[in-house]
Length: 88
Image 1 (cartoon, one colour):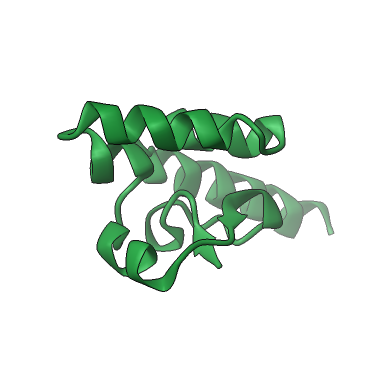
Image 2 (cartoon, helix red, strand yellow; image 1 turned 180 degrees about the vertical axis):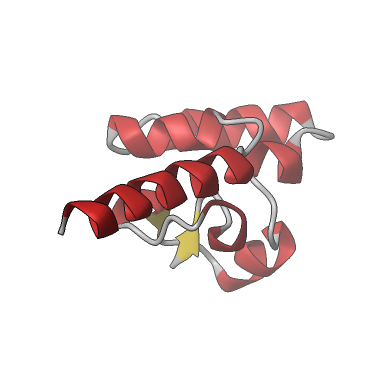
């Protein structure tokens, strides 16, 4: 399985961020978003997005995402964690 959005960059290990893929394609994609991986070849990126439309909508949206905001995610998680720690 491959993370649609790289786990190391979004910290999302949910099933909504995983798809089944060929190993060589997974290796080629590396730690990039689908857009970062294929933006230089628009016909190929369009073909991948077209196939992704058959997935659940949350997964499809991830294929279209062009950037990641890990810093904002981490900040939100730290605020939530500190609130939970004080509330308990």
